[in-house]
Image (tube, rainbow, N blue to C red; front, side, top):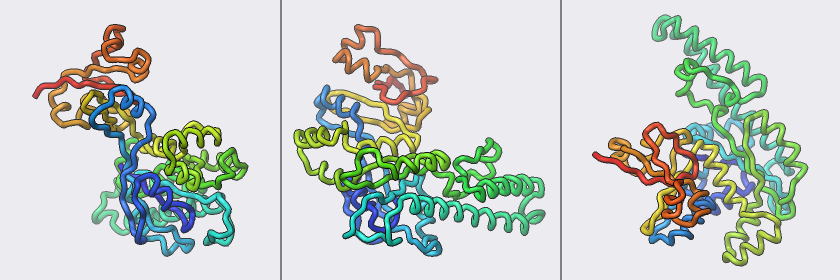
Amino acid sequence: MKLGLVGLPKVGKKTLFELLTGQSPGMDRPLPGLADVRDERFEKLVEMYSPKKRTPAQIDFVMLPDLDTQAERNRELFQHLERVDVICYVARVFKDDTVFHVEGDVSAERDINTFSEELQLGDLIFIEKRLERIEKETGRKIDPAVAEKERDLLTRMKDHLEEGRPLVSFGLEEEDERIVGSYPFLTRKPVVVVMNVGEGELADDPTIAGLTDQYEQKAYRWISISAQVEQEISQLDDEERAAFLDDLGIASPAIDRLTLLCYETLGLISFFTVGEDEVRAWTIRNGSKAPQAGRAIHKDIERGFIRSEVMGYSDLVLLGSEQKVKEAGKLTQKGKDHVVEDGEIHHFLFKV
C-alpha cells in the first residue's frame, strides 16, 4: 500500500517528505520513503516493556515530481499517480513574499479545484478512449453482450464525472467492480489534502473552514499543518517539545496526526505483539480475521492457526501487567473467525 505526495512547486512537499521519512528529496523524480506511524499506544507499550527492540508500523510514501500548471505536461506524473493507493495533495495556504507561487498569488481553493479538475479530465479521457475501443472491437474481440454492459457502465461514470463529481463517490456494484476494477481511474483513489499553513495560522482559518463543504462533496480528507513549525518541533528535545506544544495549545505534532490519517485512509489498522525482546506494531487491512493477521508475522501462523490470546490495549494499560489482565479475566481466547480490532495485543498459537 503506497501513498503519493504531490503538489505544485514551492508548497512544502519536500519539507513534509523529509519530516515524514527522514530523507531529503533530490532530483525531480519519484523518491520512495518509509514513514513511521506515530502512535501513542505503541509508545506507551514501549515504555511499559522497555524492549531490546522497538518496531513501529510504517507507511510507504513516494515523493512525486511537481505538478505543472500546464495540464499537457502532467501526463508522466499522472502515470505515477496510477500506481499509488492514496493521493496526498499538498496545498499552500501560508503567505510569504520571498517564496513565489507559480500562479502569482496564493489561493488554496483555486489550486485544489484545478488539481481535482485535472484528475477528472484524465478519467474522462480514459473513458472516451475505452468507449472508442469498445465500438471498434465489439463482435470481433469483445462479446456484444459484454460490450453493452461495459458501455452502459462507462457512460454512467462519464456523466458522473461531467457533473464535477469524482468516481470515488460513484457507487459500484460487485459486477461493476469486475468490469472496471482494474482500470487506472485517478478519481477513484482516496485523497488526503494537506493544508500547509503559516506559523500564525495554526488556529482555525476561514480559508480552510470555507473549503470543508467542498472536501465532503469530493470525499476528500484533510488536515491543516505548518511544515515550518513541524520542522522547528523536530529539532527540539522531548522537554522543549512538550513546552513548545503547550504554548501552541496542541496535544501532539501535526505530523503525527498526518501519519495516522494517512494510515486510516489506506484502510489499515495495527495490532501489537509485546515482550522484553520486542514491542512491534503489525500492519493489516481493516476487517482482517485473526489467521490473516497472523500471516503478517509469518505465513505458517495462518496455515497452522489454532487460536490467539488477546488483550485489549486499554485493559493492559489500566491494569498494569499481563498477569493482572489474566487475573481480571480480561485475557480472551479468539478463534479463526475473530475480526481483529485496531490496537489489540495478540499472542498467536499455531502448529504446522
